[in-house]
Length: 177
Image (tube, rainbow, N blue to C red; front, side, top):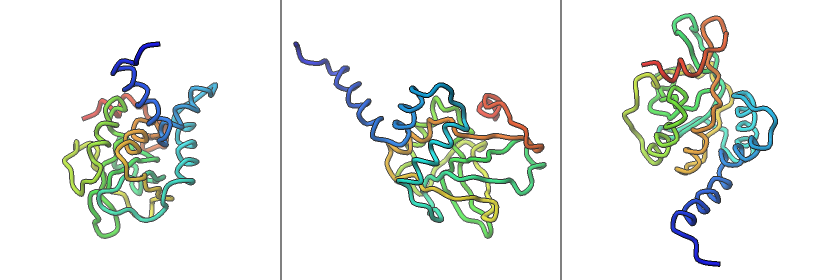
């Protein structure tokens, strides 16, 4: 039995890290589930976060997951009822943040990883949204680790709806400008 190659060791280490993260544990359960969709992933994420995350008001530079009901849904072509938001600022009765769900999951894990330990960032305009405090449900703070942020960001937990409350095709949101 010979030594493992560098690539084999890197793959082994990546698999170990994935199993130790919130997203990694959820993805592992998804492999064993008969049916998964965004609601399934969101429920799994809420379960994981209720055990390991803080539930409090977020600080600037933190990543959080919460439920949301738009105050004026008629003003938007669609909005996310379960945003994953990087907090950027507070403005009177609302917070300003970048909802990573507006980005394609193929690269939003890299974006999330790049945000760790920053208090400001330049993000695509389509991700920037204001959230009224009164319309936010329980807020879960994602543990401050690049691996955790990346693993949670790659999960498809979003719930985009139009002004009538009907689901919006995710690809339409990800492809929007």
